[in-house]
Image (cartoon, rainbow, N blue to C red; front, side, top):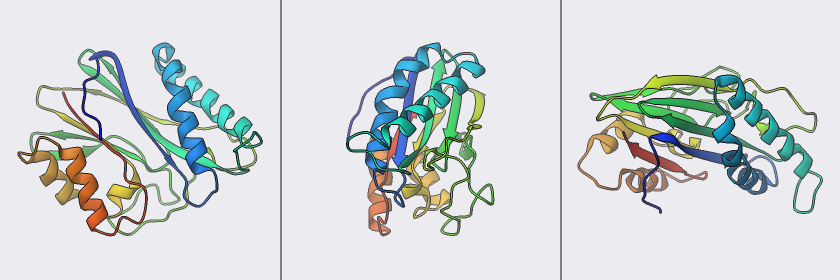
Length: 206
């Protein structure tokens, strides 16, 4: 567990969740976490962000045939860029971004799954987009969404290891409660519910 701060202007957070159905998912996710941040400062406006994600996708494909890599290895990514009072969310795959505002939880990511979304505990685990994940290099169409943050907003980024096992209502309750460590609380909730997958959670107060 880590606790800290990020800058309101030029700050960023992200989660990369290696795809469990492919060997080397941990290698792919680690590569994204190490490589993408160095490209983010130049990833404004939106076209620059798309180019940065495409470049990291190329790096994952190149790493498939490097020592430690595996053909077909892949990862999702979800992140947020902060520019004073605004936040730019981006995602590829099914890791999610939310904003808690005035007692309601709003999703600002798009599930890249065959049905385009999913209900709690009922979804396809197939992905229509990912970083890597296929031998052929596919052109990605990342979901990008700009949100004007307000005082009191809470930003949540998470892997599907949380949303597959913990309901939206329980996530809302954990973020709205008095706990000083809601990210750790959410991880514990997912583990107690079965913990079938990696559980990664980031919570930020605006």
